[in-house]
Length: 136
Ligand SMILES: [Zn+2]
Image (tube, rainbow, N blue to C red):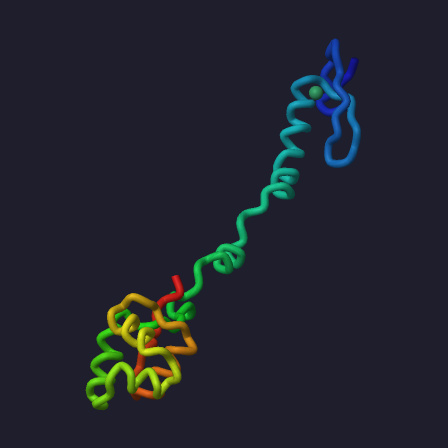
């Protein structure tokens, strides 16, 4: 049998596709035919990671994730501001329409003031009880 590629007379021929055409070729030519197809097929299936995708998945800037939180030393700030205004705990409680025990607990750090109470205290005492902190 004659190889359609190299013209060599061999015992066995293999049908291979070479650049869209089917040829009956010898074993050594069959290997060449496959070799010829491989580069184009590899180019199709190989897709490198997009740099744009990688950039999108990177963590956002830390300064974009700030949130307002009650300051750690809120008990001292409340007490100092109250005393500076010459108010008793009872006076302050009446001023912001809360129980005296709430003021006592806030100043001893036993309770954490909810947003609504923080706003009332800031207004009544003229102080800042919130600060910008990273949200994480
Ligand atoms: Zn051949």
